[in-house]
Image 1 (cartoon, one colour):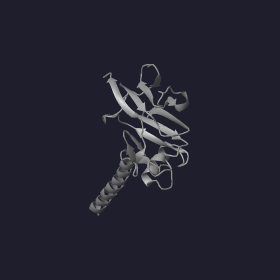
Image 2 (cartoon, helix red, strand yellow; image 1 turned 120 degrees about the horizontal axis):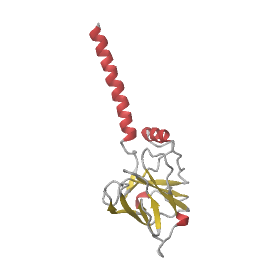
Image 3 (tube, one colour; image 1 turned 90 degrees about the horizontal axis):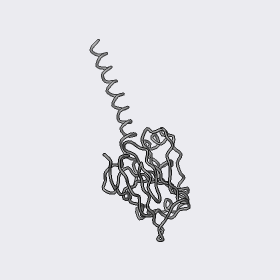
Length: 188
């Protein structure tokens, strides 16, 4: 009798622990199904829509984010530089290039677990070259020209939010060009 109760309890612990652990793993560690990678950036065109996978919906609800509708724009997220190394607060980077045609866009850094609201660079207050391209310094220390202050102490992600753009509603997301993230130096 006691053996049956212990085996039943062990089975329940394994089943509940394994189930909860697999859900945590899918929400925390596994990237979105259907996400596309463009250079250093990734985007999920179904994010926040009824077509999103259940784990992406759970992650989205848990983080309390507001999604952009498919006609409103898209968020491109980068957590690595052009060489594939993770973005770190101890390093200085330069984001260069151009953004797909849009009415407005912002670029900000997000550190997991940070409570401070992020600073952002936005398209209307940006110095550009005559070709329309730009260069933005990402650093803890002030830099001339376009500069985004990074307060992160460890790894962080860059979020490029592009608003009112035909890019997302088109079928050819893979054909767009996004800015490159180049590491310049690290302080440790």
